[in-house]
Length: 400
View: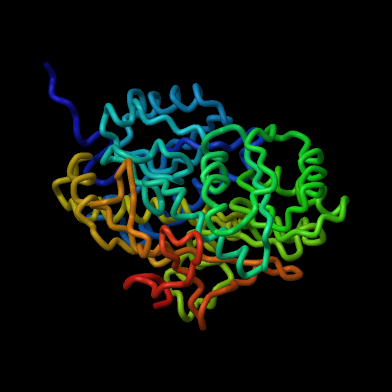
């Protein structure tokens, strides 16, 4: 049997990688910023001489169109025909792990589904574990801040959208909240107006959306049209261009994001300053994209693994050394322990801090809220659904 090449895409002067993301179709608005974030980081590193004498080439950026079977086909093309060293820009709601697991290809991207957990060669931009129960305290915390008592939850019938809202619907009752309306089957790119009418009839005063930005805007338009008096929390759509285009519809909308908000004061967040500087130089069209920063994080982790491997640059070595990083920090998210970053079942203790940032639309800006002082992150216990109280941010969290 012929030996497997563990260093495809590597020459003495270059490392070749590829990407698969959703660039067209109804879900593209939320996902097309991944690749520009990767490119900006690679361009910055290349301008500094590359990594261990090699430049980084994101040679292939492929579009799955939001089609699960197309994603699988394109992954095989990158691995078998293009012989990339790594897939460094995955941005799709239809991630399929099979062939990438089989080949051990180092894979980096935006973790939107539970399919990223398990294999040691998968590196989601802020961890490969999807702990939906860990995010429910944040919904409970916002309800407490907004003095809301009755929650409505909307999602599409795909796991990347519905899993979080389904978990929230199950757990929020323990926080003393009424779960007054749930629809986990909203049609993608469909009409949300019937849901808004039912939300109004149900008396919901907090609406949580696990939909994409297109669905969220449609929902916001209906909420305004029918005079629904409810706080809105969106998990997608944090983007200044969205505010610029729809500020009249989304005043007071809250966003929940895993990274430093782009409007945070850069004097306290040098990682954000570096990101903004590079994006303005190399990918100015995507400076304000919420997803570009996910691509940046993915590229930064890949480079950290390549740098650690040195002259012994194989796929296995990069994966092995990355998984030894117990407090990896990229300057824009809370640190990740990659020794635990692949667990398929993640049951942290109730006081395990999960850190993210809340922002709110105020006129034409996205303002950070609920942080203490200049700290934009709110860290809540993973199991503190009933009475979420902010915890001290772990060492290495930006802004500490």
